[in-house]
Amino acid sequence: MPVRVQVEDFDVARELAALRGGDARVGAVAAFIGTVRDVNEASTVAAMTLEHYPGMTEKALAAIVDEAKSRWDIIDALVIHRVGELRPADQIVLVGVTGAHRGEAFAACEFIMDYLKTRAPFWKKEATPSGTRWVDARASDDDAAARWERAPKSVG
Amino acid sequence: MPATSTPTIHVVYLARLREAFGVASERLEPPPGLTTVRALREWLAARGGAWASELAPGRAVRIAVNHDLARPDTPIRGGDEVALFPPVTGG
Image (cartoon, rainbow over all chains, first blue to last red; front, top):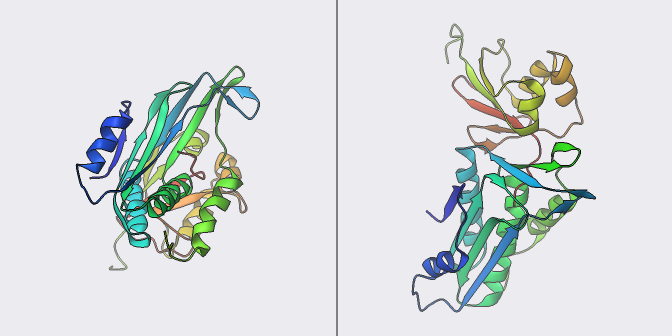
């Protein structure tokens, strides 16, 4: 299953090697890694807790990966998203995409992240000096996802 | 489904909504005629307090039925799992 939700950290090199799987059709591997910042909206962030909706999360991520595979001529894709307590500089999410050529791999990787940001049921709660707060969704994330609604099938 | 049944739905609240409502999930017997996501939201908002403010028209609330994102006119049936949550912030 190319989708995982886990508390543990992940090893990017190992995960991407497994995704490639020695497949010589692969000519491009695109990857995105999201990490925890120590500042958000002018407040210092000491820690972050990521909550999700078990059952729906895996289904939503798998649907996003399937959608990417239907839109672009890619070979495989992987999503790993962490939950639980995270600290600044920790890795949060890894998206990896393999394809014959970089155009398709880049586009599919960005699409998966943009859809994950608006459709996968994860929520961040930050610990700041003034207490904990739920992170608000950003309109810019909706805009980023909306681009793909209009975009015709990529030519890679 | 037979009109005589009293089907229950499993309602789940996540993230900020769980904290605002002080409950993570509950089994509910919606009144007869409550058949859509929109109607469920309005019914819950009628509880008042945090329910009324968090679920007020205009507040951004996402609702999933059986783990799929729903629209206001998505039907709800007995046995469904319906989740209410704020816009997502992962990644």
